[in-house]
Amino acid sequence: MARRCTASINLNAIKKNYLYAKSLSPNAKAIAIVKANAYGHGAIKVASHLEDCADCYGVACIEEAVELRNSGIDKTPILLMEGIFEVSELKLIEKYNLIVTVCNSKQLQWLLDNKFNESVDVFVKYDSGMGRLGFQGEEFINAINLLEESEKIGQITLMTHFSSADDLNSTSTNEQISNFDKTLYAKKYSTSLANSAGIMSWSESHREYTRPGIMLYGSSPFPEKTFLNKLTPAMTLSSVLISIKSFKVGQSIGYGCRYICKQDTLIGVVAIGYADGYPRSAEDGTPVYINGVKSKIAGRVSMDMITIDLTGVPNPQIGDCVELFGENLSIDEVAEHCSTISYEIFTKITNRVYKSYV
Image (cartoon, rainbow, N blue to C red; front, side, top):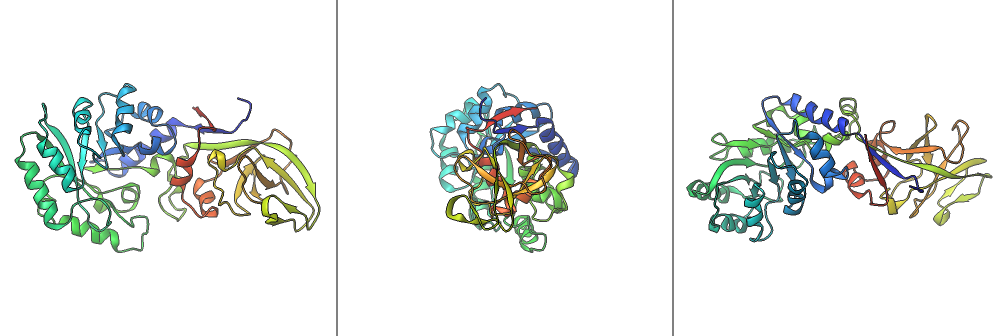
């Protein structure tokens, strides 16, 4: 590996965060969300490491589920959280023993018309106020009635998703819980309401199943930093200094001459850029960590490089490790400076970044 741009992933940290999620709702089963390649952390690696404790895995689509099954994960249940996209996928649902979510009338009809050899477990999604997937009102009740009548449907679980659980001052979450509980069947079946934010702060949403996602990877779903010390960062993204130069006051750095030195400044170039998944939107002052101290970005992120202010950094040398986020620098802090969220940064790390597992 010549270009030392690395994402070091601590699988034990992910397990620790999963067990922490379970401790917050000890009577519930926790569906470990490993969609989008486990938020960029490597779905097969993560799921394999959690296999001795995970109650279930959650993925977005059939391809993600099949990948896990083909890797040898053959016992732990897997939930397709968006359901199927075409009727041919039903053969794979049965072949790989998957749990399927039903979100709309088309999926429902495909499911009811199919001649399964064995019963299939389903999650039925209710739109309690998110405004995305899920049945509304009478459609929800009708869907449950039809599934109840089918001999090929096994366990039925009801599910909804929160729009604003990460906002502790919003009334939306309590309203969604109330809307869900008012449905005819909410107390008859097992239910799943809580995502990471729900698990961490809305105990009334802790039902039979929870769905820890971003918290598994050591990032808080909340803008407040209160919860960060409860979670262990799982990914540390780092690279190295490849150049050090001195610039005079008034000189500019990088594309567009965006950064102007306010004093004589030592500038370092780091081998990472937006082609590696580092956000191009990072503003001047976005923190990095080098030689035991925080430094900051000075100038635009380019395809392969960033420039950082080395003022106050002890004895910087070419080859020094620069942490972009992780063990010593919260990804949530970095995301705030990039006008984005940790979810996006994690999932945009590209294949050019070498992944190592510890």
